[in-house]
Length: 122
Image 1 (cartoon, rainbow, N blue to C red):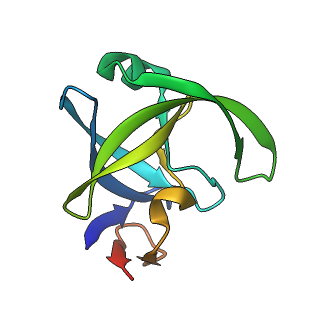
Image 2 (cartoon, rainbow, N blue to C red; image 1 turned 120 degrees about the horizontal axis):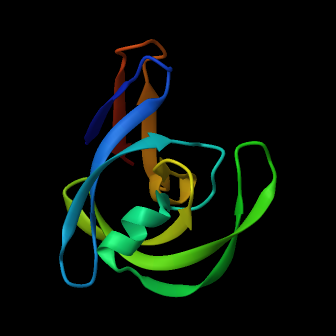
């Protein structure tokens, strides 16, 4: 199970570790964005810091329903205690966890500031 919390802006936040191919680890706090269909979106500065490998260009559907092209990088995360390969989209926004990473998991959010966020394996 993955635990997080709801911040003062009513965003569901969890902390995860992102790894590059050299096993360098960076802990990040990411907002859960159920409108984002990708796995993980990271600011370009973090992608550059980790030296992630560019894999191509990818469409992603944003929360407002718009489609945007993003550079897609290969990376890994520690997710529910296991290392999991993910597609990382680089952007100039905050760290986001999308529905791709939540696939086969159940998400529970207490919808209030300070509320608990729980992510369970199905």
